[in-house]
Amino acid sequence: MCIKMGFLSRAELDNMGFKYLGENVLISDKCSIYNAKNISINDNTRIDDFCILSASKEITIGKYNHISCHTILIGADTIILEDFVTISSHCSIYSSSDDYSGNFLTNPTVDNKYTNVKNAPVIIKKHVIIGCNSVVLPGVTICYGSAIGSLSFVNKNVEELVVMAGTPLKYIKKRINNFLELENKLLYDE
Image (cartoon, rainbow, N blue to C red; front, side, top):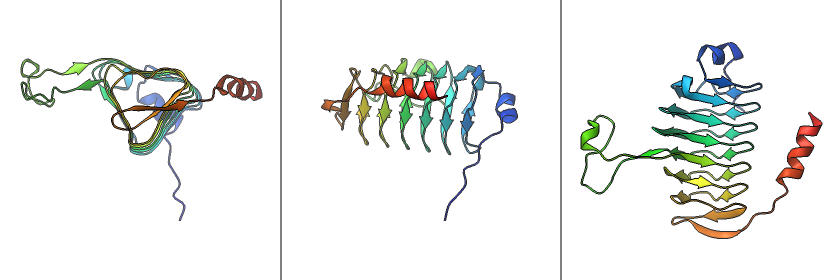
């Protein structure tokens, strides 16, 4: 049985009050968007069912990105996805995290003076792919062309053009860099 995905119309998207909304943006009608005024989404981006985007500060999504179902982008700091980024299903990208030491209280119902939340930007550079069920923590930059394997815990920066995977995150191999040639062919064909 094939289930047809429903996307919001352009009028529905415009009424949400995004900071910026490019052309050919597809967002599922089952996606939850909080603080759209702080979210910029560029051309040819698709966001699938049951995703949550919550932008206390700012979420910027570049061109030709795909955010698969059940993925969240959330936190009190900036999250940036440059162009040609793929986020597989069930991923979590956090720009905020509670202090788990036991020295503080946790969760957003508690007054800030009793918590020690870490807020830091997350930057995902051009041509990055993140495999399903991965978690990216505050303060992480994943550099150009890198790939993160499924079920990975990304709590440190990732250099460019590598494949990393696991918990803890480990180097697997270098990644082939044919992106620019393919990107240029795609853009030329338009």
